[in-house]
Image (cartoon, rainbow, N blue to C red; front, side, top):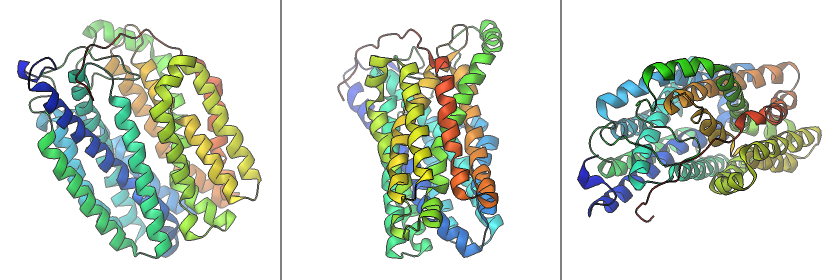
Length: 422
């Protein structure tokens, strides 16, 4: 960022505010994609005559695409710029989502979900990188707010999908409308982005839970960073395991909440998506309030309570015969899981001797293992034992979070600099 873009120069604040709005629009678009489809998964499964195992395997194609393609985001961002890359992914979603509404074969569904996961991984990296550029301009943490916006978008998408299912809107019509919305959001964000290279304005980032440098720059010296990464690998693996458990908790209501309510609790189509919506609503509240709660009680205590909020209510609800109890339990699970990703990323980015970018990259990649493994695991157990038994992996994940919480012990944080007003 050149001198005219710095926060203390006359034209900086308006430009940063515009760029902040651009990132908000990108996070919103990214959230709408998957959430809009989730309530229709049971319908898609039944229309194709798929088993739970086959449906779970198709859903798992999305995180598989993310794992295989996600590492290319850095090189692509360096080539075209993080903001432009995120916008291009938004337009890509505007094409792929309507095609999902037309899929009529397992391999077509799996292939399109693979593309969805690949686009999601690249867009996730790109929009976070651009968000970190904006954050450096502000001189204080604003990244958590973007993730809160993502949760709002997920709730909105889930409600839209649930309403469309309840009203009997044909899936192709719903996905076509979603494609138009995604294209409009991407087009609106494009002119608001910060210009120039992602590396041009790299400097010390403000204190933020889990904030990464975002542009591939190493925060430490090369040799010491590599040595420190090897030394810290056991801790990073434990932090990665925390995020795998968080991924299982987040994915299950999205991939299987609607099927669970319909198959085991006889919920109508209009209510089938409520487990996911309740989870995302509570997670949104947790993300917007999590920083203050963590500052007061510490990440370890918050994670332990969060793990209990996941395991105990979901376990009791699965033993009951009440669909309302399942919805309420997933709401509590969303509240409990809300701070896990920020806390683990913050811990990974604060390990002495390890560059922030390296630590965050390792645990973020490991987190996708949970998103890859959870859908087919739940589907397999669901076919052999029952979907309630499959969804009980959430209870196991909550218990493991309680046991692993100590690895989230806090690290020193730098105070941020002055910033333009919000």
